[in-house]
Amino acid sequence: MGDCLPLLCDAERRQATRIVPAAERCAYVVTRASLRSLLGSEIGVSPVEIEFTCNAWGKPSLAPAHGRARLDFSVSHTRGLSVIAIAQDARVGVDVERRRHVPDSLRIAADVFGEGVARRLGAVPDEGRDDVFLRLWTAGEASVKASGLGLAGTGGPIALCLAHDHAPRLGGENDVDSDEGGRRRLVPLALPVGHVGNIVAHFDGADRPAACPVELGCLALPAPAMC
Image 1 (tube, rainbow, N blue to C red):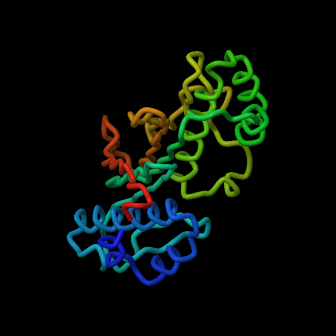
Image 2 (cartoon, rainbow, N blue to C red; image 1 turned 90 degrees about the vertical axis):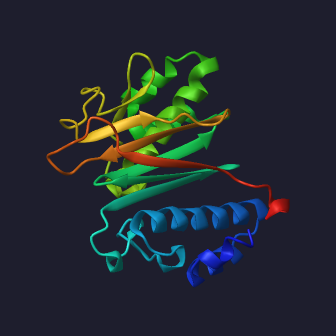
């Protein structure tokens, strides 16, 4: 972690000191330094010169000081793993989780995605329900991150549903696979064993690429003793 601290700004260093668990503090420092390094490489500036700003919902972006850099980015962290997504000419969101049991998955699904999605989730056999829920959840988190809103800013259920194969799909219960004419893409991530995640990209322009133009970096985070 010592090699990473010099890359952080003063506010990030102060934030690091407020994180008590050593593993979480280490993860924060390494992830922020990696984000700065990746963005600096993309726009041709030193990592320490990167400046950020946030919208009203807290989504970070490159500050206006970086001119016409048309990059968006998103970061997600779970124990032992961080993922950084960087997109050109698109708004991007990424989310990852460790595979685990989620005892309140049906209630959470009803609150966040609506009763119809919760009913479909409830029809999934018990042995597979946690995995289906976590794929749905990470798709939802990635979607609201790409939109620039937090969960509180959606104003209602997140417009995602479960298809017949139990995979998450963009669109509400009545418009499965809706991607607004190709302006949104949902892509499941290939992650280390024990993790699940999704990435969502929103394209604002008329010309939309055939593939999702997102650079993805996965960081296997060091143990606290190594930081």
